[in-house]
Image 1 (cartoon, rainbow over the protein chains, first blue to last red):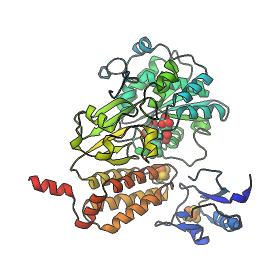
Image 2: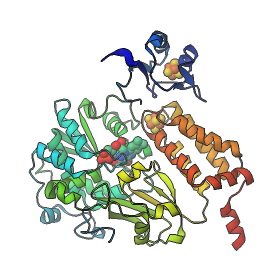
Image 3: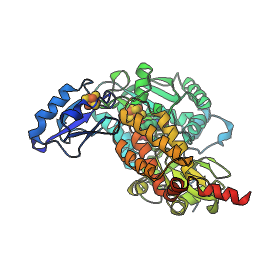
Image 4: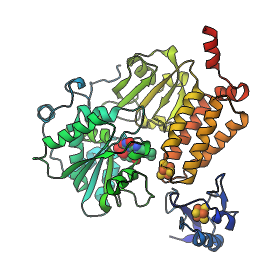
Amino acid sequence: MSADLGWDLVIDWIRCDGYGLCGDLVPDIIGLDDWRYPLVHPGPIPNDRRHEVQRAVDCCPMRALKLVRAGSMPRR
Amino acid sequence: MGILPGGPRLLAGPPPRGGPESYGDHLARLGQTPAIGPEDMVTELELSGLLGRGGGGFPVGRKWRALTEGPRGPAVVVVNGAEGEPRSSKDRVLMTYRPHLVLDGAVLAANAVGADSIVVYVGEEHGRARAAMAAAIEARSSTVLVSIRTVAAPIGYVSGEATAAVHFINSGDARPTATPPRPSEAGVRGRPTLVQNVESLAYAALIARFGAGWFRSVGRRETPGTALVTVSGAVSAPGVREIELGTTIGELVEAAGGRRDSVGAVLVGGYFGAWISGDEGWAMGLDPQAMRARGLTFGCGMVSVHPAGACGVAATAEIMAFMAESSAGQCGPCLHGLRSIADTAARLAAGRSDAAAIDDLERWTSLVTGRGACRQPDGAAAFMASAVRVFGSEFERHARLGRCSADEASVDVS
Ligand SMILES: Cc1cc2nc3c(=O)[nH]c(=O)nc-3n(C[C@H](O)[C@H](O)[C@H](O)COP(=O)(O)O)c2cc1C
Ligand code: SF4
Ligand code: SF4
């Protein structure tokens, strides 16, 4: 499998506490909804943004985010 | 053509009013649980086209196949009789009157997927169904090779969701868990687990005896077979019926003593389902695949008749309040989103809101979809979206004038 398809961000909704930190770090990829929970923009995350998004993943205080190869997991 | 050519299947035999069918009567009527090998059983189920009856409509054969091909080691079968759907009673009717048919299906499932234990998970509030299942297990305790026990599912809409059931059986907490792992990968005690609705299992017990061809010999349109449905609302004879799939809502409503002119709208599929207008719904066939193609869901077979002239906004607000209340409260968009939707619908129903509220409703319903650990927000959102579609002019009237046409009707007659 190649990484050319980009990446998906998988959110564990039970863990996420809506601090909104991820959205503040990469606002053009992770928006925030009315309650400050992450709202990932549609479509896979391109390869050249992977490291920035990985930083948001690492900064999530609840460890609620995971980057996976695009299409490798159902979105929920 | 009646609503059930060839007669009842699950509810064949002595009239239900007589209480649970005894093991002796069950054996006399249907014989022993057939000795059918795992491969033949799964193949027959696949050929039958049986779809799950707990709400998701997933092909039962495919689910059993995945377990036979999945991780090795003894599996567990969870018999899902939680039935948390407020206007559904088909699962408890089945468990109460035909407990041995359900157990047959569970034993066949255990044999097919290599399970050495069965957990019968029945809603705590369904006392008669639980008693009937417990007595049925007791009656065959000396003949069954797997361990079977009952667990009372706590009251709540979400308790019957597959990961919630597994979570509760494992640790007494009936809130859904994140997936993966799915129960089929790591469920009860970490073992591969088949979670299957009681009605699905009872049909599997008949398919094992009479074959896929028999099962498919009825069904008017795309989905073969028969199904249990629960009819409620503006009909004179509400209750559980078995129907040929494809039977129209109109035929079912008439069979339940309802009339065309008494039907304002129909809620089909459960609180995860959708409103459909009386005009559109009357001729619509209750067929899971045909309904899915129209963006509707057969769900658990719930059909609730909303009387002509009653307020659709109030009826919607009431159900949305229940859905918000029954969120397990662990996923932000579900917790906050359903609450916002329910509060706004309630304000509209009470005539204390404006047109912007309808926009909010539409925005929030798309915002919560797909953003929870389970499908609770998706189901509630689909229901809400259907309300705006079907009762759109009533919603607007409430927003604009602060009251509804139902109020005026009652003013006219007084
Ligand atoms: C919120 C929620 C509640 C559910 N409640 C029930 C239930 O009470 N009974 C049931 O059989 N399935 C229920 N389900 C569906 C189960 O997750 C599961 O799909 C089903 O038991 C599988 O059996 P089936 O394939 O035979 O339908 C529920 C699903 C959700 C999302
Ligand atoms: S940083 Fe983590 S906890 Fe905070 S909103 Fe993002 S995913 Fe949720
Ligand atoms: S989506 Fe809602 S009901 Fe489902 S687990 Fe999350 S909070 Fe609970």
